[in-house]
Amino acid sequence: MSIPSLKGKHILIGVTAGIAAYKIPHLVRLLVKEQASVKVIMTEDAEAFVTPLTLSVLCKEKVYTAFQSQEHEWHSHVALAQWADAFVIAPATANTLAKMSHGICDNLLLATYLSAKCPVFFAPAMDLDMYVHSTTKNNIALLQSFGNHLIPCEFGELASGLIGEGRMAEPERIVAQLAQFFFPKKALLKGKKLLITAGPTYEMIDPVRFVGNFSSGKMGVALANTAALMGAEVTLILGPTAPHFIENTVKVCRVVSAQQMYEAAQEAFAHTDIAILAAAVADYKPMVQAPQKIKKKTDQLTLELTKTQDILASLGAQKDKQLLIGFALETENELENAKGKLTRKHLDAIVLNSLNDKGAGFSVDTNQVTFITREDKVVPIPLKTKTEIATDILTLIHDELL
Ligand code: CTP
Picture (cartoon, rainbow, N blue to C red):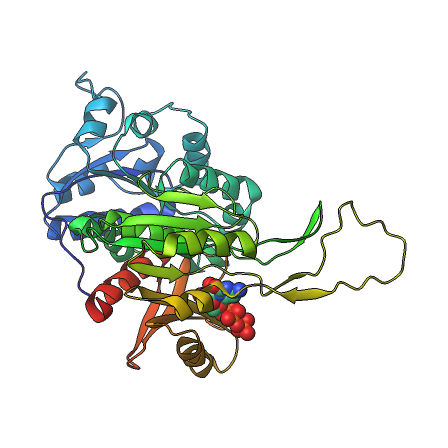
């Protein structure tokens, strides 16, 4: 899939003081090659890692480090924010993430972030232990819930010598994510009505306990947001998940149980052109839900479970002109099992998610899938961010099925 150009886009880069700042000259070069106009803001400490002169030569612009230059020239954070079509903070250190998430603006970069109305992307970079610290995780989640776009860290060797997550995404990946963001606006799905299910379902045992699973809903939400940017009218039926940023044109229907998801999907399906069922629906629910909290009276407790409605199969049985796409989460005999579901549930295509693939599956921001059509066309999609995977899946639906 070719990466569309960023020609004419105004990209403002914010560089903070992390060793990954050494990659920013390359990022600027790539953006300039894509014919974007680039300006750079740096924190003062970032100058220890990469010089303003290098960046200035590459983007052919003045580089901004403080509210006031040595020549007593005033640099307006508001003007910089207004100039930008996208603000990319890379590398984003733990310190800057913490300040951004709490509204602290004690330098030009942070004041510009608070003034920015354009989409903001941030590419964290830090050592493994800082990255996995709950504070950092919370700050990243908070920034995402404000609508900022995470450019996830990559796995590998870190400057400290440790191996793990925390490396800033490679400049090529940052450029690809920006291009993917601007590209979907090309209205590939204009006028189409999409129904998407996402997240887990919770089946109540008693008022405080449930049967559930680890699904985060990230893949389905990425599909909903990307489809909305492609011009589709999207209804997202979302199970219980942590807060997500959801484009404001997406109609969101929050549900808890498989039965509620089934009813919401049934109601929407007749007015749907394309249904993509990405939810991890519980296959079984307790036979009875105890009206009060079950007390710990016995050494053993047996729960009797009964099957939930298979939402995808029920839509497959009644589908008329709709396109129906399912997901298959497999741990063994992946292709064979996925193809079995495709036929049994009368689907037009199925997206195979293998839990055996590194970087794929629940909670993570990346995924690796295989798209299989009813005509037995098998398209592997390599490891990418869930937003990029969503773009690829929707483009394949457009190219192969519509
Ligand atoms: N699905 C559904 N309703 C259910 C169970 C699954 O709509 N009650 C949908 C999922 O959203 C997904 C597809 O069916 O699109 C396949 O789900 P998966 O969990 O992979 O398989 P199951 O059909 O549940 O079969 P199994 O658990 O035996 O693999």
